[in-house]
Length: 305
Image (cartoon, rainbow, N blue to C red; front, top):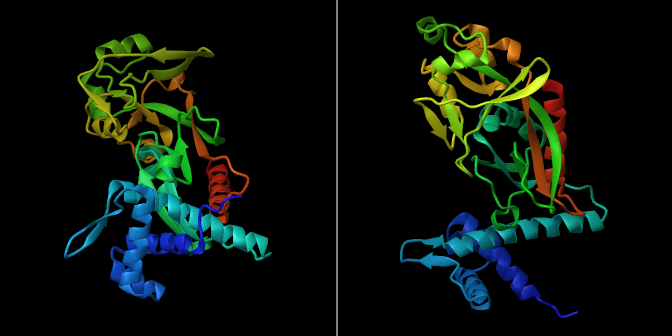
């Protein structure tokens, strides 16, 4: 078998990652106990091998190029797996440590996941959590994510999908808004109301409202003066401001409903849900930090359902 990486090249990768993380050759040299010139030579060696620039250099600072940032993310993940593999092979107890990169949508981040993370950190203080809060689909291989939470699973056979929960939907409005118009008693009544809409950012397709009417699943689409895209929480903010009626997850507005600042509309047609799923790359070896987070999250979600 032809060797692709010798000891010098692996050492160069480690020094490159240090320079990228610490933002300079001198800082990386100090942390590694070598000279700044050794770090510079290591980076130059990698750039020559790859045929791309990894850093933009100036007299005052260095910064990663786009190619350098992608390369560093992949290298850091590979180095962490090497360390985990060594511990596993030597019979040491797998250490739950390292950087954990998670992509999560805005809704689930703010109202479900983020409030749980201090407890996870107390259990595993050596894990550094890097939260990417966005509603766009991410690429695991290109962006070096460990885990993602999504409503709509990506069509990718290399990913494992683990169901977290079915989040109940609820239709809400402010009491003040409903005082200005007749309270709707049926879906037909919604035609005379401002039904705040949300467009899916990936396709621009309008997301229909979901209801259960007499045991049958029903989808409803309406027009409104208000349409939100990218961040569904914008629709919640509009509803809280009295702009109209909006369908959202119950876990987002449960406090509003308890306090009476929002009220449920058409409760007799409730009962529909949308699923939240945990996604992570299929691999024979799951790093301990990833396994620990999966176990923590599934246990906590199970307790709170």
